[in-house]
Image (cartoon, rainbow, N blue to C red; front, side, top):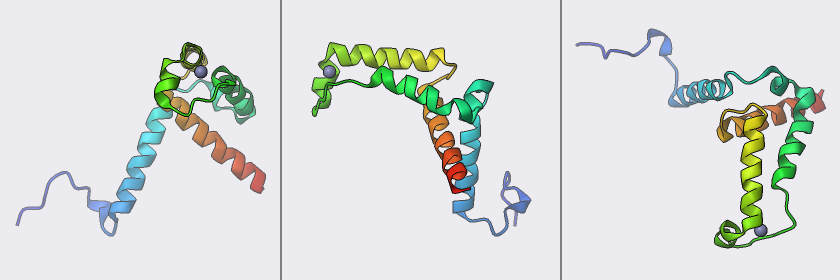
Length: 113
Ligand SMILES: [Zn+2]
């Protein structure tokens, strides 16, 4: 019987969960690849996060997403938010979200120490 190709030999005992986890890690690394040094520094995390958050902070509260989408003020804020994220050196919103997660985890670990 022929063995299926492109199955690595050292996956014996590995579960689908292991594979998913490995893939997940690869994607995380990939999305954060090329991140500027100052964004990697945990000391800058809160400062940057706050600056980005302030671009989107508004006194408006729209319960309806359509209403929010039609609100000029909120759409200008959303545009500023995206522009600041790019200006800070993030390549895409996904990278920004991954960055938030990674730093939140780092902070958690620091607090537990
Ligand atoms: Zn609004």
